[in-house]
Amino acid sequence: MFPAAARAFFEWCDGAWISVAIRESTWMFAVIEILHLLGLTVLIGSVVVLHLRLLGLGMRKQAVAQLADELIPWIRGGLFFMIVTGVLLFLPEAMKCFGSRPFFFKMLLLTAAMALHTAVVGGARRATDAERLPSWSRPAAWLSLALWFGVGIAGRAIGFQ
Image 1: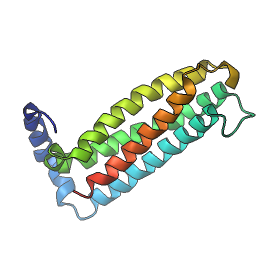
Image 2: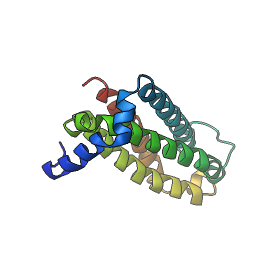
Image 3: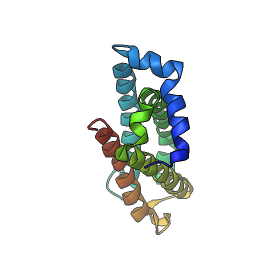
Image 4: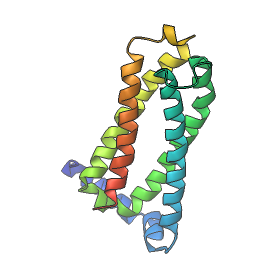
């Protein structure tokens, strides 16, 4: 799935000292995976709450912009935590990931989800109420949710290879 030129990078990652340490440990990979799922839970939980509000399906008494401002630290923290632990999960399995369709699609979906999420949250933070949301915010919220859940599904599929 990845270009042949990327193989050297994947091999370097696979052979790095931290990759070897995680791979040879009996418990380190499992602990990192638990932490990764914790970060994913914080991220997805915050994203779902915000997107449901954007869709008018919950928390209707709270202003969209206020809710977005309150959830941004949780979303950023969950994403940061997920990326750090994701890198630590990737390193010892880099060569497995090199030829993995689910990994390729997870990275593709993650990139698209982060880009769309930035636009959706930016629009939400500028809105003073649900009536002033940009016309594209509702379809974008549905697409964003689909992308984030796609990231999780593709990530889970990596384990089945």
